[in-house]
Amino acid sequence: MNRLFVSAICFVMAFNLWSQTDVNDPMPGIQFIRGDGKNYPPGQWNETIGTSDINIISSLSGTSSMNNFVCDLMRIRTDTDFAFFNYGDIYADLYQGTITDLDLHAICPFERSLVVLKVTGEFLKQIIEANISGIRRGLAISGGKVVYNLDRPSHNRLTYFQIGEHPAYPMKEYRVVTTDYLADGNAGFSILTTLDSTQVYRTGISLRETIRDYILNNSPLDQTHVKLDERWEKN
Image 1 (spheres, rainbow, N blue to C red):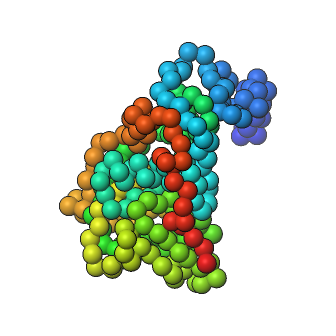
Image 2: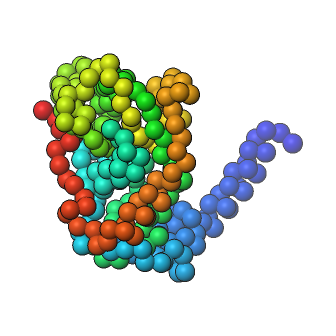
């Protein structure tokens, strides 16, 4: 049996499999969140855990109510100085009305846990510079303020960096929380794998459960719970 004949057989088998699949439904039998976020698979995660009086919306750049909300919860839950995560790790929004476990699984479809790092202000500055260099759009942050200028060269775009109420001190050690996904060096965060074991504390605290517990205890969510401020700015 020659290679051409084998290739032809493989192509026919692949085409037949594709032709039986609805290209508009990449995972047949699973309903995805659309529109107002209330397109629920029957009987799955429909327990109401709280309510919201406002829409809490994510963004893949700049600041947004959802990014700020989640990052603030990470920092508060671990009592740390600063928090960050990559924009792409939040997958959905929360809409005004009831909130169910399905909403939380839409926001955090992957199991993420919180990791506390002990790093200097200079190390944290390098992380931020790396994430505003080239075409990278930045980070979701909590516990400080970042001002940057895209007209400046890559790795030299940060014009102001604050942690807490003061400018970040290069040699001061800060307690910073992020996700285990980033701490393991994913999504371009290989710099975090250079930290030694004394600088990394894996809390085992679930990000999804952190959000869930807050909603359970603070509903209905409103503007007092979700801050939209100028923590991340271009100049």
